[in-house]
Image 1 (tube, rainbow, N blue to C red):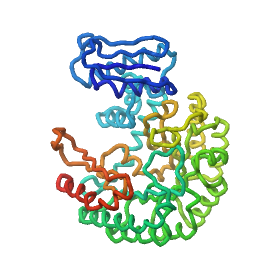
Image 2: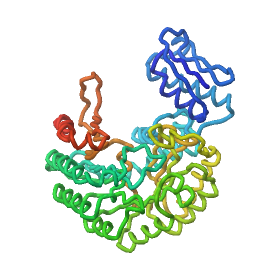
Image 3: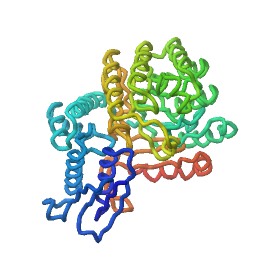
Image 4: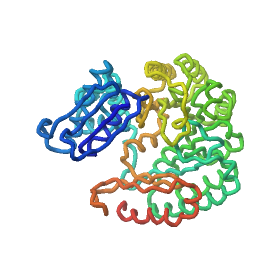
Length: 477
């Protein structure tokens, strides 16, 4: 067991995640003792100890500066103790590209932004350059957006045919909800109409229908949902995405409905092309069904198809990942997102014992092979984010053909445009024209408004969900 004792909650988040990155399998016990003389005391299993004295020993004043310095000192000590350096250095946040984007906006070029991340945050040179290059592409891709009168729309369908063991999203088994699906849609349609009223005179730059698995809806239900969106917002958005997702829900009839409504981008997501792994993680479809669904989408004229893969699934090796990538290469998707496995406590996998954990070195090979295969397919990295408890301290990267990047994916990470979200478990992000002081005294120009995750609660409390958005409407306008 590793123990961390801090004199202030200021240090707890960063220290926990830095230590967890070095020792992912070790239990960590963390406490706060405001009577402790030391700012931080860290004791490893075996007795090795790291500590930081008082404020005077740090030689800096501001709380943010102190937090960064303590994190940096802890990282250096852990790195020396283990003989390892983390791919993303001392960074614990999910959006490393925001740092690079900030430097680019301040006038740095790509190499200068990468050098800053190396020096300031100890990021490995290849990762720092990756973040800076992606930030440069993001800047170009976001340039056409209408930040004054535009927004993005997210619609959540929180149902799946089965729940994958690694999944921590608020998804519910579709068959259990089949009898109440109409109730959910009734509530969702009410919320969408309210958003339509709020956005009169504006139009969405991007629309993203996700989940869950949106194609758990029947073809007629999908048609009604997409027809309502057509009715509420005239004109075609720059990008219109629907996560077809699981091959075991995709049918010709559903794809024809989606195509009829001018959706420009879909996903067919296998996560792996190894049948043994699909069976292990609870995805009730075959590798061949993935291929059949992909070819059917191509036959029906879809010209922008994304596929998702996960590096580090239990029991897989780099050889398995290479075989998966070779099969994906024959399909030639227009974009490919490669995730490093992140196991959350809410996921079934996070509560199971005895699963084969893939070593960091193996995941490093998987991630590297993914980048190489993407390059061979003419796909370039265009967005990047990280997650808590991410395997091997790596990252999730989206690769795409030059004109097929998913703009919404960038927006959800960079938070530069308002995203209005409808459905259970979704979050609206209002980008305000200027900072406002909230009831808790905090000043911010990004207001988050959450919908409840539980589907039954969402249905019964839909007026409250709409009311939450109404409260923020005047601030946004």
